[in-house]
Amino acid sequence: MNRMLLATLLTILPAGTALADGGHHHGAAPAVPTLKNQVTTRIAVTDETVTLTFGPIDLPSPHEGDLAASLPKHVFQLPEDTYMTGYKSEVFTKDGKPLPQNYLHHILMMDNDKPSVSCDGEPLFFAGAGLEMMEARFPEGYAVKLGKGKHLMSVVAFYHKAPPTKDVMARFTMYTAKKGKPMKEMDVYQVGINIVCYSKFAQRGPDQTDEGIETKPGVSVHSAPLKFNMDGCVKFAYPHGHDELLLITLDNKTTKQTLLRTVPDVGMDGTFLAFQPHQVYRDAQGFSVNTKDEYEMTMVHHHPIHNPNVQHGMGNYLLYMTPGACPSAKAASSVQ
Image 1 (tube, rainbow, N blue to C red):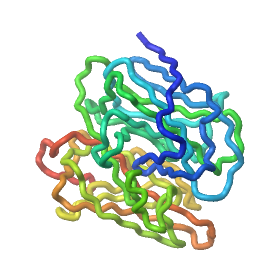
Image 2 (cartoon, rainbow, N blue to C red; image 1 turned 180 degrees about the horizontal axis):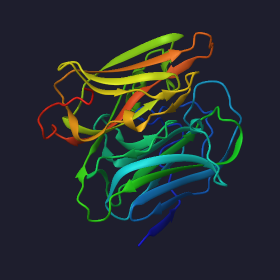
Image 3 (cartoon, one colour; image 1 turned 30 degrees about the vertical axis):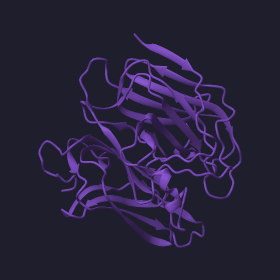
């Protein structure tokens, strides 16, 4: 039997607090339109989904400058242990008209009662979306546990350069396993070329903002070293990027293996279109990562040389992994 919960969600963080997003970016500037004028966030819980619906709100006129992060933060609890098996996001008007994906800056889902395994001292960022708004479906039998009564938090922001639009809404749907179905639990690990842990934002260089890393005219290649804080077997990798992105990779430099290689669809002008399903890593066998090896992430962008506008890029993954090495005891590469 379906169960419907309608809840007024509580704000627990002060306005302007930055939150890590594994690539969904945000800072402390005040100019972003927020959900401050919404009355409630509706939560619908059924046997197979948990759905959060935000808004409606009216977006203001676009403006110049970096995308800021005056965000609503809302806390809710689930009535029983729930196992998330995937998710999707949507942006639309109150009358149901779909809106372009670039209206969305980010949706973030946090578990305030569970520490992040990738960002020390921060709560777990377990799901979300940027402009890619890609549907995530984990391999059969794998899930992220959302515990009964845990303080889960949603954060939503719309892109400040979206045209003036009335009655804008967003929806985030989490797919869940049927009650009693045995599931293998996964941890969630953020990685990126840009700094993804908000507690380390002060370490960002002069070319890195809340929007990402500045890309120069022509081809830009950015790489960053990576060390994992845990051994794990990656089953699913949710990618995130911006306009003009051409490639994201994750390499094991110690074993000389390319583990992830993601190429998005982009328009002739570089506008991000989509991560197609065949470009999204999803494999029950998985590939191993560990604390001892050296890793590197790389992203490639092309900024048209005739375009004078400053562009910032990101290349990030949310890695869904089971603890410990993969059962095969072999660090299998996803790229043959």
